[in-house]
Image (cartoon, rainbow, N blue to C red; front, top):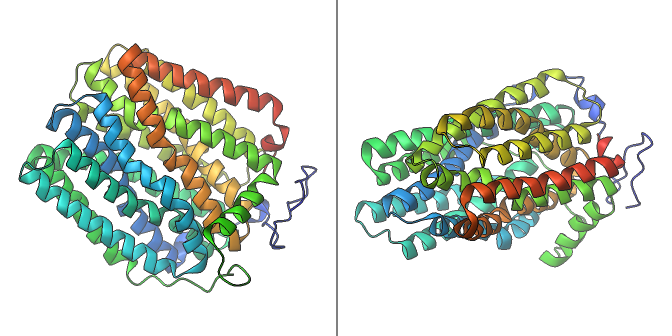
Length: 431
């Protein structure tokens, strides 16, 4: 693939399949994808899946901090164990998504996650969930949930059609954010009523519901990578080459990498310890904050879905990232629990643009034959790097304080994205 031109022409992907025109995608109904039965099944399944994934990190952190009375370092270790499988499995999962039956992958990974939830609930109920045991089950849970992520992302254009892509991505963001609102909150309700094992049984029930929804899914025939089956390294190199040869996509992935190491773990992991250690609350009180952030993301996702054609989507993504990192900086400076609510809401409002723009831009500029592998790279920088960020922030926080660490991470992110906004003209105009 040659260096991408930003003079208004669309890029020519490596496979020869043209990336579709974003303008065309946004001329159709923003909810047109929901009229497609198999996309509806995937979307409904994603609600159950994302609800489990968002609640799982919260429940593990809650149990470490309050169930066995450990600190933010141990919380960071468990979250690290939960996320580390992504580093080793997500690229393979992306290659699988391009070559094998994606429905089978979704069913098998959800069955595996269900087994882990049941085992964890039984371990907690019998007081055998020590920290070493939690690390092991977190590894297993992370492996089960990681493999399905690039598969789900690659199925969006395959099921919704490229003409519905941006609307489908916004709908998927709504599924994710509604799950962010409901998952931790309902898990907290189940935990308060039935104990920590009750929270895990709640997650197991969600997975059973998701399996029932996804079972009738039918995936249309898709373009397969040409030639004989190759090694994982060869498949990965092809996806990396696609990103590396496009200047705007290179910069976009750089910013996602920075966020995956700093801003994302600061909010999704470190904030929970901040609520307990510096604000003197139960760590479970982070659930309403995540719910408020989810409300903000849902609102802005609806705006994106209804607005239709948006020029300069790359610029909107970077502006949203600036707002989000500013909010994280202010979160680290708060002294009262209530002060966090307007900050997480504002971050959520920016987050809707951040989520919809970055995934939409990547999928709009990637041919379907490469979609699974490129979304594997996307999952790697968004999910696979977060445990390293969480672990690093946990150790730094033990030395200089949790709030200072959150603010410092946010300043680093803000400085990088401002510099990029000034210099990266290609990304600003990416559609």
